[in-house]
Image (cartoon, rainbow, N blue to C red; front, top):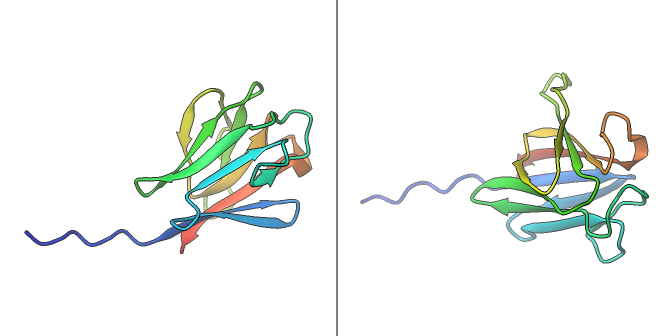
Length: 122
């Protein structure tokens, strides 16, 4: 039996306050929250100390909300058209190819405390 071709390597890029963070095979888990021990420290009163985790799982990037206030996922297509924003609280969601993540507040209204993300070839 022939081996199946390996899926192309992907990288999830987050931009928050001008800083770039990644999730990929070399760094498969990223923590977000108010506490200084997180990979991305979100300076917002609406963020929990450890608010959410994003991990590479079976070729997909999965967001797990660990917070009191929830996380808000705002998907965006290649043209910039946005889908309806979805609140995730105490649950998981597979991230779309690009969009915004609101920490404790809707991404569409949370301004500087929203994180931009995109999945790209790595």
